[in-house]
Length: 76
Image 1 (cartoon, rainbow, N blue to C red):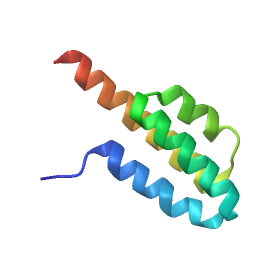
Image 2 (cartoon, rainbow, N blue to C red):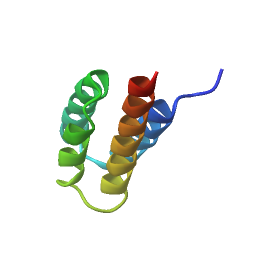
Image 3 (cartoon, one colour):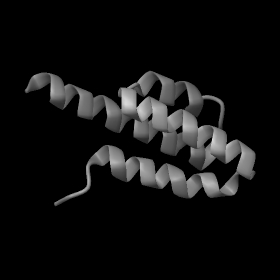
């Protein structure tokens, strides 16, 4: 079974969050878990706008993956 694009993008974000202080990384992880569960790509994008560099890009990729997953679910 293949890994979904959302799961793969979330894993990449988790790897990038290692660069942050623990308290900040924990806050972002909790926020993202809730946003992913809701399928809320806009919340992930808002979080992406608070960061720069690789973390921001990873968050934007995650938001795009959530959008694509939501679009596929809507089409079915």
